[in-house]
Every structure is written in structure tokens, then in C-alpha cells.
Amino acid sequence: MFVCWFFADTEVIALEPWAELGRMFTGFITPDFGATEYLLDAVWQTISFALLGICLGLLLGLPLALAYQHPLIAAICAFIRAIHEIFWALIFLQVFGLSPLTGILAIGLPYAATFARVFADILQQAPSQTLFTLPKGTDKLSALIYGRWMHMYPQIVAYIRYRFECALRSSAVLGFIGMPTLGFYLESAFRQGHYQQGGALLILFIVLIGTIRFWAKPLMLWVYLPLAVYFLPELPVFQPQLIWRFVSIDILPPMLQGQTLTTWFAVDTFIAVFDWAYELVRDQVWPGIVATLVLACCALGLTHVLTLIMLPLNTTLMMPKPVIILMRGINLILRSLPEYLLAFVFMLLLGPSMLPAIIALALHNSGLMVFLMARQSDDIIVPLTYRPRLDHYSYMVLPVIYPHFMGLLFYRFEVIIRETAILGMLGVMTLGFYVDSNFAEIRFSGALLLLMFTAGLNVLVDYTARKLLQAPRDKLQAC
Image (cartoon, rainbow, N blue to C red):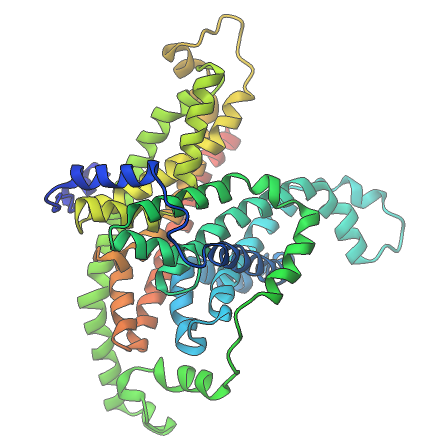
């Protein structure tokens, strides 16, 4: 990770970053909630896209979770969730335009693959004793529900609530590509320097995330869901010819478009496709992968450091209650704001380099990790000789939670890779930069090839992280 910092582009290009930061801070403490038109509509659309996307993800993810042990199902889900929601939105944008279907599908598909994996892991942890106590002749569905599902119901509900919070962030980010959510107005406000308006929108979004447990009650979701469907913007007329053109012509390499199927297998055509793919890999895929990994490793290292610094400030074993309330309020802000939005703000301050992206990724992920690890720290039973000092914390608390800390950090590395790719849309020359450029230039075949490499990189990182975490467990079991 230190080597990656040497190669990373961390130059500050902005002329007056502190003056700009002062204007942003002034706008944040003097928000103008009346400056944004259709503010309530934007908030409701943000909730609607998130809620409908989560419902679609659950409808698709639950049956996939039951078949997740099949290698083909697991591979397909890994590929789907490895592509970020914004990239899915860019794909559906070519077919459905700026319609609700684009936002709902962009959230629902990767979340379905994520639900499939997580639910499968949760159900594997369910105790099997209940299955032997069920009456003879119990059907498989009843055995699944009463023998396994109900045991893990609290964990499943807790994870769905967490994914809904993530869906709200994804829904807001979709506004950066034109969807009518809070992100659309946030981008407009910050680009134009209207920081009072942008501050009001940020405060509103943080409050929206922080009060989920109060307004997103399970019973109220049955009220929100039909309202979300009813108040959706008008759906476009379904045009099968657009979908057929996209899958049969637009995503094909240029030399195959308009050609008959028999010419595809000609030697000259094969050589032309190979040359096209080789040039794309050499000029875009390889530089994009290197930049993505450099940026992700730098962000991972800074996340590790920031989490270790902030964690003692967020646990009752070290700090009094007032300090913990203040620090958890800061963590709420950090984990509520999407990485893409944070990177956009820091890029306005520091200029277009890797530094804004590294800071944004590290702040968001460390805030989320501290939020999750602080609960585990508070539950640790310490000896009577323990005192709230840094040396006692380092020797009695940190070693206990550190294995879970590293497991969570490796999991966040996969997320950081995904987020690093899309930060290329802000000008950092990661894989996302080249994907966005291909979409902007209507070169869908190149964008699709780049997305395949993006997904492959995420799958490889996930596999490597699992192996690294499994190795110490295997050694411990062998002992």
C-alpha cells in the first residue's frame, strides 16, 4: 500500500482550496431550504427508487439464495454484483432513457445478486436441529421456513434494513446521471457554487439516512410501496425494437455490425475482432486496471488508519457518553454521504487528481467500519483491572476485535474497488473513466468489454480476499 502511494497522483491542483472550503462551510451552516424547486418531489423520488429497487432485489434474490450453492448461479451473481449501480444505469439508459425503469433496474439487479449471496451465507449458519423435530412428511417449503428461515429472521431483517440505507445512497447517486433524485440537485448546486442550497440538500439527505429507523418501520413499508408505484413518473412506451437493436447491433464490435452471421466466422473478421480487442485492452483496460488498483490500495490503507484512530473515540470502553454522541454523529455524516458525492466535493476543492477520490473513499468506509465495529467493542467483557487508557485498549480490546476488523476491511476492499471504478466518471483515469468515455462516444461494444474486465477484477479481488481470510482459519483448525 505504501508503494501505491508513491505511484498515486496526489497533487493539489486547485488554486485556493481553503477559500473554497470556507465558502462550503458557510453554506453548510447557513442552509437555504427554499432554494431548490421540487425539493419534496426529489426526496420522495429518492425514497421511491430505493424502495422499489430493494423490492425487486428481494424478489429476485430470495429464490437465487436457495440455489446459490450451484457454481453457475454463484458465478452469475458474482458478475452482476461486481458491476456498480451507475454502470447498470448507463446500460439501461440506452434502452429506457431517463425513466423510472432505469433507476429501479440499476438498483434491483446488483442488489438481487448481493441478497442471494448474503442470504445463502446466513441460512448456512442456521442450526439444523429444528429440521429433525418437524413432523414426518413436512414439505420442503415449510421445512425451509420453520426449520431454517425463522432461526435467522432477525439477521435477515437487519441486513435488509442496512441494504435499504445503501439503496438510498445509490438512489441519490443516480441523480448524477440525470435521474430526478436528490443527487441531481446536489450536483447542480455544487457545480454552480450555490453552497447554501447544496448545504440544505446535504443536511436533508443526512437526516433522511439518520432517521431511517423511525420512518422506515416494516408496517409503514406496506403504505410506502403502493405510494411509490402510484407517484412514479410516467413510464415510457415499451419498444422491443430498441432492446433488440441494443443487444443485436449496438454492443457488437464495429466490424460485426451490419454483417451476416456467416461472415462472423471468417478468418479476416476474427483477426479484425482480435486486433480491436487487443488495442482496447492495451490502451484502456490495462491503464485503467493499474489506476484502479493503485487508487483502491491507497484508499484501503487510509481507511485502515482512520478506522484505528476513530474506533477508540466511539466506544464506551474509552470515552464518556457526550464524546461518543458527538463522534457517532460525525460517523453518521461520513457513512450517509455516498463516496461519489464526497469525491465530487473534494474534487471541487483539490482539483482533478487521485487525492479527492482517496480521501472520499477512506472517510466513507472508515465511518461505516467504525459504526459496525464500535458495537462489537462495547460488548466486550474486560477484566476489572482495565482502565480507559490507550495501552489497556490496545492490549485488551483491540486484539479481540481485530480478526473481525480485518475480515470487514477485506470485504470493504471489494466495495472500494467497485466505487473506485465509478469515480473515473469524475475524471480520475480508472476503469470507470474509460467506461464513461465509451458510453459518451456511443461505443457500446467497447464499454461492454470494459465492464466485463471491471467485473472480473472485482470477482478476482473477492476471491483473493476470501482465500487470505480462510488461510489463518485453516491453520488454526489444523492445530
